[in-house]
Length: 268
Image (tube, rainbow, N blue to C red):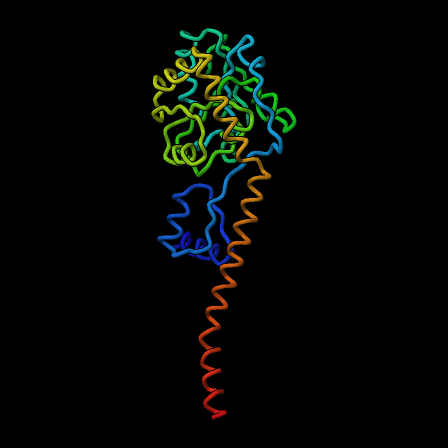
């Protein structure tokens, strides 16, 4: 009940933006909304730089996991998969970046404490904004080891900005994101450590596949810079402004015709 009321209240706005097609479909069909824009998450670089492959696999193949950890973004499956990856890709290295979710204090620290000594895993914690480019530019692959999703993924868009391949849990929102925005993603069955390891091994043992996916994601990133995203929003706002004006003009045409007829009758 509360969710329905909140949604109806939000839809009173001139426009509501969502990032996945099924969100717009739900609002259009369930609430008869006519003001929902399907937008794009976008990337932050105005002029993206192509990936520099000299920074990758030199000498380690870096697997990057970044996020706010502890709720639906979890590390257990990834930690289970990583020793399997090392057996086939001994120069793999796992980088875990980001903070705990505010409701899960101490989560990533507990994961770190549970790992066997000597594994090439680095827990960075919070990474300052100015260090993010280097973090992604040196990564061979980004992993999204989630149990669920709440929509589009910020780290996935950052991977496109820097031309990084993605391995991701097979979640409906991410399938839709990949298809809608042209991302190169290898999916694994959610919670399946062996399948996750397999996807990594195939990718990390193939420099050609890494380059193909990196180039593909960079090309996708070029199409969704913030400049392009803002231009699309402005075009959409202008279009709907014109539509509203036309609808208002149509709504007035009936009464105007009535008063004109009445005036002609009076004059006669």
